[in-house]
Image (cartoon, rainbow, N blue to C red; front, side, top):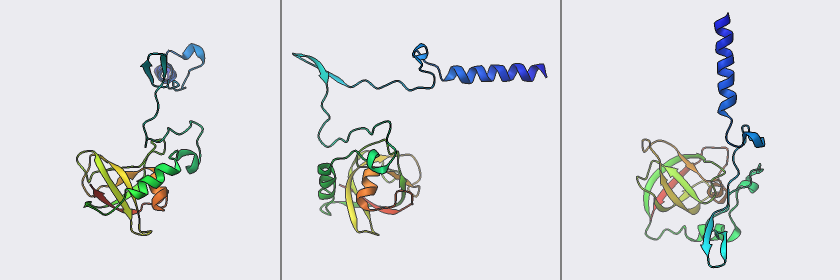
Length: 171
């Protein structure tokens, strides 16, 4: 019985300490460190770096709805739809897709249909809509499923909680 109690105390202490970091004295138990904005050097001192055009902002930590997680601008959405043309695209195949990490902004698909990152588009036959995306390779058989960004699924009109079948093209 003494061994079980001692083991339990050691395991509990390990779990508690696993959540500690250097911010523990500032109430940082199990609390992630706040991210610092990127800085660039300039003649007038340092200032936050501007976000490159076409890059969506990171969702707020308090985001709970699809609208709050989808930080793409109307201009970025229009551009993604406009770039999704048939010209010169090569069909890679079909994939069953699920919603990827909603905190990862932008238009992307993580799929085993590609072996290197590149540009492409996805099409949802049920609505006939297409959207330009970044193709991001993941390990797995070509028949394995893919993960798609929240912004892309919303533009395609695909169900966020479903498993839509998408056609993937590369440029």
